[in-house]
Amino acid sequence: MTRAMTFGRRADEYDRLRPGPHPEALDRVLPVDARTVVDLAAGTGLVTRAILARPAPPAVVIAVEPDARMLARLTGAVRVRGAAEHLPLGTGSVDAVVASSAWHWFDADAATAEIARVLRPGGTLGLLWSRADPSVDWVATVRGIGNMTADGSARLSRRGFAFSLPDGYGFVDDTPEAVHVRWTRPMTRDEIAGMVCTYSGVLELDEAAQQEVFRAARARLDDLVAGPDPVDVPFETVARAWTHR
Image (tube, rainbow, N blue to C red; front, side, top):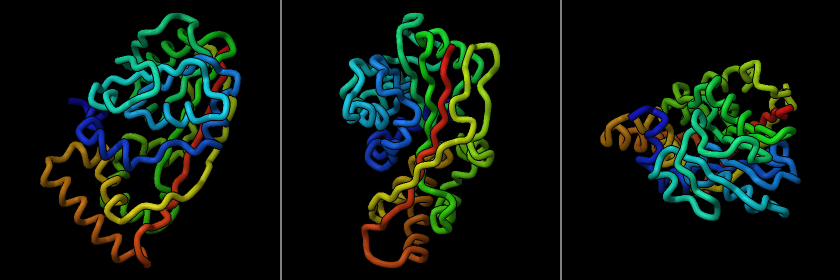
């Protein structure tokens, strides 16, 4: 099993504890007139639900996800088993493709080519990353316990999510500077420690080691965060968008 396919081991916890995208960030990458939208690497449907909750949701949302365990948790959309590099969709059949906390798992050239193929002219590719805000000291410390600095998105994070799509596929960068939207969400300390255990750097460990990460994160939270539960956890969604000409 590849590291990218470990998330299904904790599909229920992933769905319950991971943050979905902030609506403001989603608005920056998803045009209001998009009628057919693909949620690529949809996981358990965190982004799908956010798309469907918009005041004027698309007529069709297609959730594409390779892991059947994750896809089984997803509701409210057309569910399709598939991967970014081989999209089981027709050429020029969609208005927008959105991928959240997933681009770093793709083969960039193959995924870009496939996304370009399925998008209609003028269609949009929107990339999002949602996470507990690592600029906050206690969050950074707990992330370290979960080895999130070795997680799949860590390299992009260190570059401020500044990168370019492969050339030759007709994409124009709409947001050359990543857009950061910050907010807070109340969570108990147990929920925060549980969220730490939904990242790939922990999920590739055996069960005993995962439980040790949970215990260490839980104990550290007692040391670092004052006051009773719930804790207002700082989150951010980072957004980038490209138009396909």
